[in-house]
Image 1: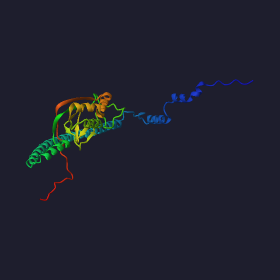
Image 2: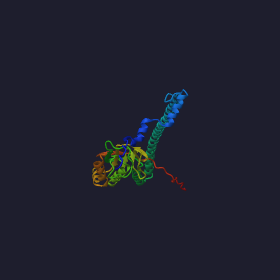
Image 3: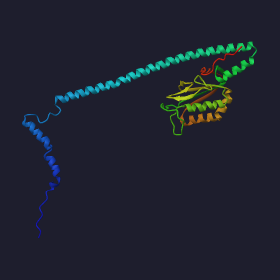
Image 4: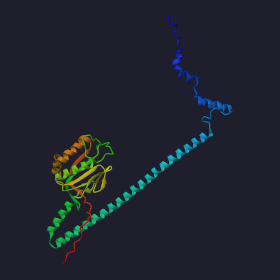
Length: 288
């Protein structure tokens, strides 16, 4: 017959928890505290140490100084930005003034040229030069035509880039690619002279996208964009709407909310283009 088994203490399996409850302090910490008591010193300095308060104060002063130091460049950057904007605007005003003076001198040169050709009975050359001046955008023109206004959709995203439009694009902004397709559609529809927001389109004109603006003749334009075209107004409008440019514009209006209005007029004005910069041409010295 076997001897009866000794009853097992249920707390034996919880010896670690019991030890933690009985001796919550680490033995080393407890020995150090007892030693401080024997030396008549407090068991712990805690957060009441003057040195700790001084360190906290110094850290706070350092953080405040760093924050102020980081804010200084922002103010300096804004000042430099404002100065740059003012400089750009001043130079742009100078360019506008010089452009007006150049256009006025060009008109005088053209008038003197026509008078000289008529004096030597070469009116045919005068007519040819006038026609070429219109085609190259060297002179302002006036005649029947149409006005096409294009504007961004309401609430359009302001950080869009000038990438080709895709089906997933929904920013609602008019891009340089859109403007190029529409302008080409108007040329194909019979436009003889054209300008966007007063910028004449010539063979050297580039329509590009930079930042948040469309550049025409390297001049930034902002919406709404008004395209003025000289030509047979009603016929040009009909051909444009039936052509590639009109269909593309209709897709922008229907799919992206871009706003557009078109109207014909018996008389529209298209200004002269910027004077070309001659890099290689020089006046020829003919022998008499």
